[in-house]
Amino acid sequence: MSNPLEINAPEGTPFLEFTRVIDAPREAVFRAHTDPELVRQWLGPRSMEMTIDTYDARTGGEYRYTHQNAEGTYGFRGTFHTVREDYLVQTFEFDGWPDGVSLDTMRLVDLGDGRTRLEGRSVFLTVEERDGAVASGMAGGMEEGYQRLEELVGQPAR
Image (cartoon, rainbow, N blue to C red; front, side):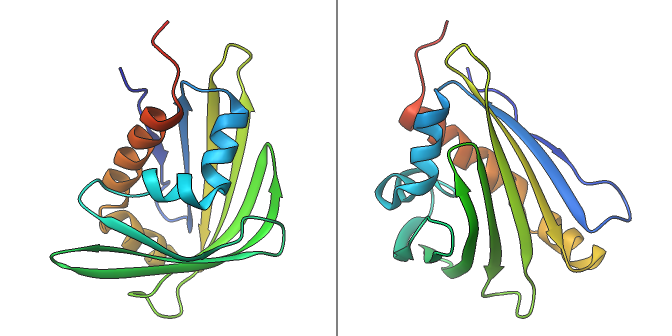
């Protein structure tokens, strides 16, 4: 059974926070966030096909990818500011929201029992941009992506 994604978007603030436990060791979760072939297999909804143009997951690296389905093509890009086995910092830009960017941080917390807790925070330029991201259906895409991640690297149920 999948662990729930918890998203907290306090009213009137330009950020959101999320947590999700993945039934897999931190090393596997980190690799799934930094290896382009693994990223392609889990990031985003199942209904989308992902194409990676570049994915250089190292401090100072950059990424660009698209998700595509019958309804359209959606591009994303950003820069990796910090990449460590337990901490990632990156910018995130969606082509469909010009001039909008968020700064995203994620901690990968080793729970000591073969599981990892993701602790993330996205900071937007304005409250309106954060609210637009939330209204876009982002939570559903995140939930489905993290289910796919757990299927890819997860451990059998205890």
